[in-house]
Length: 240
Length: 119
Image 1 (cartoon, chains in turn cyan, yellow):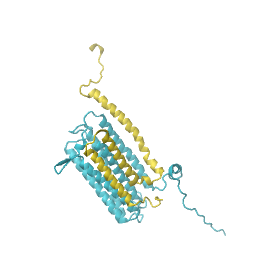
Image 2: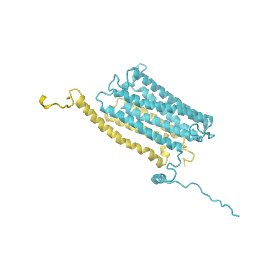
Image 3: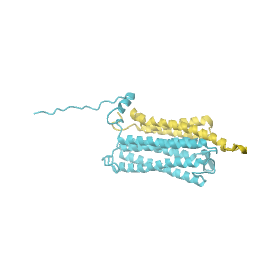
Image 4: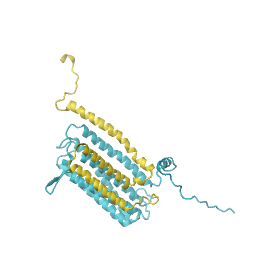
């Protein structure tokens, strides 16, 4: 009688590092992104495409601002607020920036606690992140209302170049939409965490894939990207 | 390797980066508050912006701990945008000059064909 012989396949071979690793990964079978969950790789590729969209908006804004012969409205004055009887330039935008950065900080910590399978902390931090995001959207709604009351429209405004309104509503509107969608998904992920979906590998409602804490990191990538885009909008639209 | 259990890093690094981002944001706000102008303004804005973007991508989005295969796939393609940026800058400047020439105050009317006998 033949005996089945047990052979050990051993652990996986160590992957080469550095540039050699890059070549080896890209020329290898099955997958190029070793050790990266598929959802995370797909999120990165989506963010890459989003990078092109936002960059196209910002470059289009650069073009209209460079080519207009009318004076461009001074953002420092347009976005000033009068607080305690003093006119402070750009203060609302500065607060919005701090709110969004703080939400990025809490998101990063939520990812960390997620991988530690600390359900309570992950849930709380995700909720704080969502609350800060909602605060940001609320402040943006306030800013839009203020500007619309002052007569800023996509086709013109009383302060100067007509293109100002078009660029402002397009860029901040698109970014605000991203933040709003992010808040909705943060709440969904938070509920999944609280319900224990990620611990029990409960299939997701959309893809039917088993739940796991990697989705918190994927969610985090999207959220940090929203913060990243704001860094560029803040520099080019509000400070320039 | 960190990838076996996903991206796990001590909480301190996130708090430090958070603090740094606050400092950099304050600094870029102060550039506007103190009305810095000219090259100083633009270079400070760009430096603070790139530092903030770099910190977010590198630490919050874990890029420093990823393998080069992913890093290059994501970070190299956006460099193509430099071409669009260059084209936009060239054309924007040209359009501005053309508008000044033809539509600005005191500019000549756009060149029109005038029949010879009416000159």
